[in-house]
Image 1 (cartoon, rainbow, N blue to C red):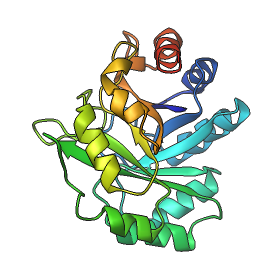
Image 2 (tube, helix red, strand yellow):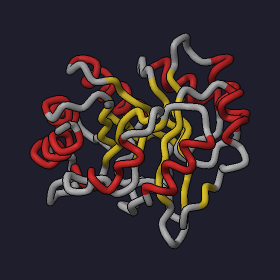
Image 3 (cartoon, helix red, strand yellow):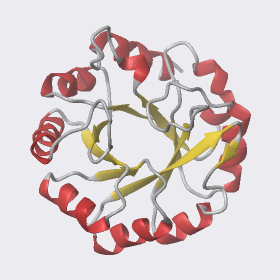
Image 4 (cartoon, rainbow, N blue to C red):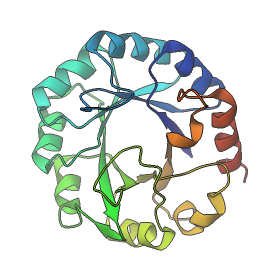
Amino acid sequence: MLVKFCGATGAAEVGDMAEAGADLIGLWYRVPGGSAELTSGQLTELAAAAHERGVAPVLVTFATDPALLIEAVTAASIPWIQLHGYQPPSVVRALRRDGPPGLKIAKVLHLKDGTCAEGGLTGAYERAGADCFLYDAVAPDGRIGSTARTLDDAAVTALADRTGLPFLLAGGLHAGNRDAFAGALTHPRFLGIDVDSAARGERGLLDAARATAVTGAWRSR
């Protein structure tokens, strides 16, 4: 099971997440108004810190310009990109066609009240070249990303049954709710988890102890 912690803003956080057992670390780039938004220079710096600690950096973005995104992942040597907005399949197709060899593309699917906003496009994303999906919850006011809203396990497994790609699970995951996702955990295409809010300490930074608790709970059996 892959474990991804999202929204690092400093090298110390990257190191703490590596110590907590992270496989992937999310770095926000072109996320308007995002609390963990990075400049190009910071993105390159933290990607290098992740590589040094044996954690794969993931560029997390709302941007829709493939050329801009390819430039960013190439300059920072980032092997994963997470399209967290409502980017169309054409963006995935361009990234697959023109991006660096081996680039992993994760497309987020947004669920609200059990309904997937991209439900009619999952096949198109697969044909365009996405490597996996990431299921995340939409807040009642429409906000997406780091909302701490929890998904329903039945909705997750139903969506997974309708798609053909591995999936990462997000949406309010923490050390105490692993058992609420028995269906997702046993699904043949379950790939891992993506955690943000539950790994943050009182100052809002990613916290080693909190992240370790999440990793230990979800990998406990």
